[in-house]
Length: 83
Image (cartoon, rainbow, N blue to C red):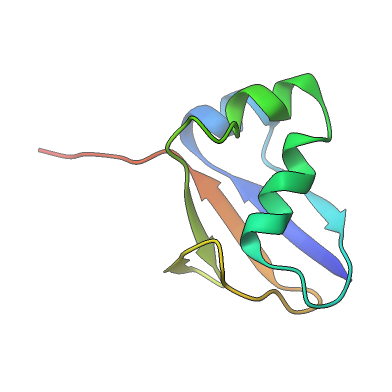
């Protein structure tokens, strides 16, 4: 299934605006992140497990156990603070 991935803030600066990723049916957000980490050295650095990265599925915050559906949108971004 094809998943539309978007990147924001410092992740976008490193990887670009986004991409489309092919994953098996039943994949989760965590499995998507792992697949992206394996895609390139830049992906591995920015999305590394040691880094705090937030995810949103269909524009709603989610954890990595969230199940993906064909054509869905997942956004990755660093934690942000405001003031």
